[in-house]
Amino acid sequence: MLHAAGPLLSIDVREREYRTEPINDVLETFVGGRGVAVKLAHKRTPFDVDPLGPENRLFLTSGPMQYSQMSFTGRMNITSVSPLTDGLVSTNAGGFLSRNFVGAGYSAVEITGQSDELVAVHVTDDGVKFEEVPELERARVSEVTEEMNDRHGLESEHLATIGPAGEHRVRFAAVMTSDSRAFGRGGMGAVLGAKNVKCVSIRGESTPSVDIPEDVQSEIHRAAATSDSMMKRQGTAFATGMINDNFSLPTRYFSEQSFEEADRISGSAVEEKKYKKGTCSACAFACKLPTHDEETGFETEGPEFETVYALGSNAGVGDLLNVMKSNDLCDDLGMDTISCGVAISAYLEAEDEFGNAELVHDLIEKIAHREGIGDTLADGVDRFHDDLGVENWTVKGLEFPGHDGRVVHGQGLSYAVANRGADHMYSTILEQEYAGEIDQHGLDGKPSILVRRENWRAFQDSGIICSHSASSGEMMQSHTEQLFDADIDDLLAVGERVVEHERHFNNQRGMDRDDDTLPYEIPDFEDGLEEYYSLRGWTRDGTVPDERISG
Image 1 (cartoon, rainbow, N blue to C red):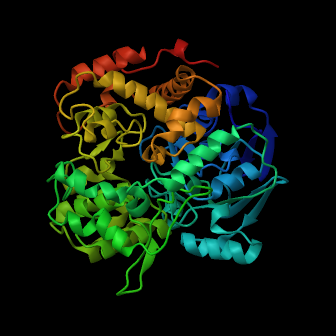
Image 2 (cartoon, rainbow, N blue to C red):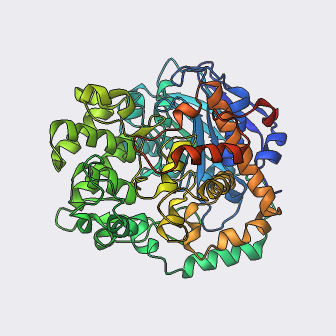
């Protein structure tokens, strides 16, 4: 089976030391990306580690598709123990970093320890250099890019950077690349911040040679270029109207399920402000959203749907320019727009301030710097909801995305069982429910669909293949067996191993069935949970038997 190539580069930022070691056995079994990172974390990270302690390890990984120049492959992965969920979390981002990463010649980079000084870590195919950067304390992401460019000729596409939020250990701080692309979910920025690492730069000219069929690459690239998908014009925001009409768009901190001003923040509204094409590395699909407000001159990238929901409808804000500004602030300060938006919406609920866009912008700044009420909100809804007297809209501590499981019940079950917590990308069963391929109501037959989709998504994240490839006539899916020189059952088996290693790691940290819950009821939930565990071969308590984990 096709897999990533190259050694593991392990970096200890406390001792200013680094070393490489072969991991061929891991690569052959877990392919790359999320899979390799999860296996390495399971082997090398203590089960009882403090997420913000020096013993926690953060892994950056690519997959074999990043050795190509094919559409839908400009992504890479970060995995660590999350300070938000307290479990193992993987998150991936687009942009241009992945090609620079494979150019350095490593399949995985591990960062451990805790630096005494704020440091930039420079990774090349010649090794690692450590640069103390105390003058960049509290610097925004764009300011770090400017400084690294002036000093070393490093562009944003070479950098994985944290903003003030990461330094202040905001539990949903993101790691940013290309300035506006986020390794968003689970607080990976806080993990780097706790290690006192302001940025990691990556570049080199030692890309391993991996045999990927040229004819398949060409066909997928052509399909991406000629696709007429709405995503190419409106990004993921294209779905806003449909989701609102489906009464599954959370509004005013989940108290309502549709938003009367949805058309003002919809994909059409975003398209009106889009002024040029935007893309990720080597991708002809070009679904990114460089946007410009003509009246004010304000420019940013996005917003995508989840930001439209989290900082728009759920906050009661029906003005796209204000959502654009919120999105831009989160990017530059280094925060996940979903968790940040939900935390702010919880505060707006408590203070009866829905729709106050100026307050939203002020709160984003306060959270990133842990000032005033921002210090409370920076810990996430799971930790502060009682103090504010609001409901706890999280699963495993992770705030909900914008697809209401009270309406799409399979997605509700997916939120409950996902190892990351309330995450819409873990299975994407919502796609079949929205499309009418399966009934939105109830869980009949859905656990088996959920298992298969979770395994497939875990494999895609190991490949790494962008989930938006499905928008181009499912070309990537139909040719995946050729690309990886494996049949579908073997690919799904990779995904199953990834999911089980994540769950087993979290089990060792005390997570079990009690954590697979929802803040609302859906029909036949307990029966669906039982069936899911049975199909997985796990115990009725939601734990993975040790004998299912190898090595």
